[in-house]
Length: 499
Image 1 (tube, rainbow, N blue to C red):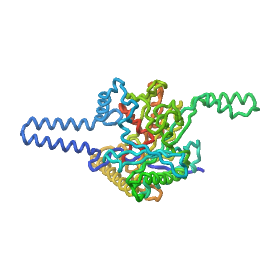
Image 2 (image 1 turned 45 degrees about the vertical axis):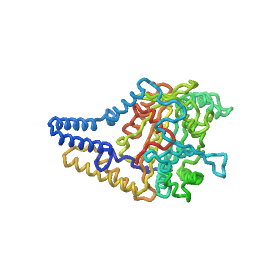
Image 3 (image 1 turned 180 degrees about the vertical axis):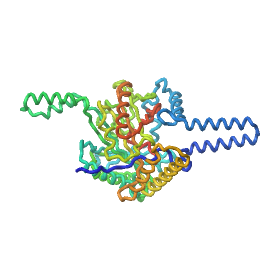
Image 4 (image 1 turned 120 degrees about the horizontal axis):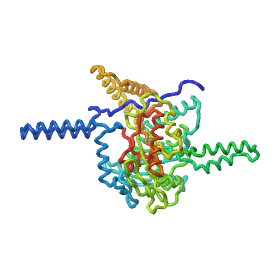
C-alpha cells in the first residue's frame, strides 16, 4: 500500500513550564529566602555595604543560574555532580557499592513479593513493592511487575502495516491512560546483544541443504562470514507500574495482602491482553528468579539473561561491585570470576525531542541501525495521564508558547523557529486529544550502553549518539559523574520520569 505514513507529535515543550516560567520551586524558594534575609539585614544595619553586597551576590547567583554547559545543561548542576563525585571517592575509583545486606541507595526501600495464581501454583509472578519516599509510607507506594514480550522486529514493512502498528499502540496507551485502570506507567525496553560469529555461522550452515552446488555453498559461507560480525539478538520486556492507593480502591479489604496480589494479577492480565492486541504477544511473566537474572545481566552481560544459577530472588541481581567514573561506571564480580564491564547511561532532555511529526518507527535507528554490533538497552517509558489532565497541560503549553512568540515580535527579535514549532506541536496535541483512542502520555527515553573496556565504550557512545541524531533527536544527555546512579533508569523498575 502506498500513501502517507501516520505521524505523531512527541516534542513541544523545549523548557520547563510553570507559573514562573523556567524557574523551579527550589530556585523560587531560595530567591524568596535570600530577599527576606537581605531586606532584614538592610533594615537592621542600614549599611551601604550590605546593599552593595546583596546586589553583588544576587547578580552572581543570577549569572550562575543562567549559565549552561557546552551540552546545554545547567552549569550549577554539573558542578554539584562533579563535587559530589569527588567527595564520594569517584576520582580515586573507590567502590560506592559492594554487595551485602543492603541495596544501592538510589534503589530505595523495596519489598519483593511472589504471587502464584491458583491455576498455576508453580509459576510465581514477581511483584516489587516500592515505598513512597515523599510521604515515607508503604501504603502510598506502588507495585511493579515485568513480563517478556515479542518485539516488533519485523524488518521492512509496508506503509499500511506501519500505520496499523502505530494505531494499535496508540490505542494501547490511550486505553491504559483511562481513569478506570490502576496503571500510571508503562515501560518497554529492548535489549540488543551481538550474536557470536561462530554461532551465526553454525546457524547458517544448518540451513543449507546437503545437495546444493559447491559454488552456492561457498557463497553462502562467505555471506555468513560478512554478516557474522553485525548480527544482533533482540529481547523485549514490558514493566507495568501500579499505584497502590488506586489498586486498594478495587478490593473490599485494602489491607489484605493476598487480595492485593490477586487484584494485581488481574490488572496485569488485562495489560498483557492489551499489549498482545497491540502486536506484542506475551512470552512469559517474570518470577523473582528470572527478574533477578535480568537485573544481574544488565550489570554483567557475560551472564545470560536466562541463567538462574546463583539467583534466588530479585535482590540477587545486585551482585557486582560498582565503581563510579566520570564517563562510565564499572561493575565487577566480587571474586574476580568474570571480566569487568563499563556502562554509560543517557537520557533524552526536554529540548532534544523532535519538534516535527514523526512516524511510528522513528526510533528504529537506535534499535537496529547501529553497526558494528553494540550491547545496549533502549528503554522507552510512558507516564500515563487521564485525558482531562493531559488536555489542560497541552492548553497551558500552547498558551506559554503563544506568549513567547508574541513577546519576540514585540521586542523585534528574529525567531529561531522554536516557538513556532512548539506552538504547532501543542496545537496538534490538543487536536489529537479530541479523538477517542488517544490518551495523555509523557514519554521518556533512556539508553544504556555496555562494553568491556573504556575505549570500546567511548566508541559505542559515538555510534549511539549518531544513531539518535539520525532518528531526529538533537542530543543525548549522558549522565556524567552519575552513571552509577543512572543505571537504575535502565532497570525494569519503572523509575525516573515525572509528569
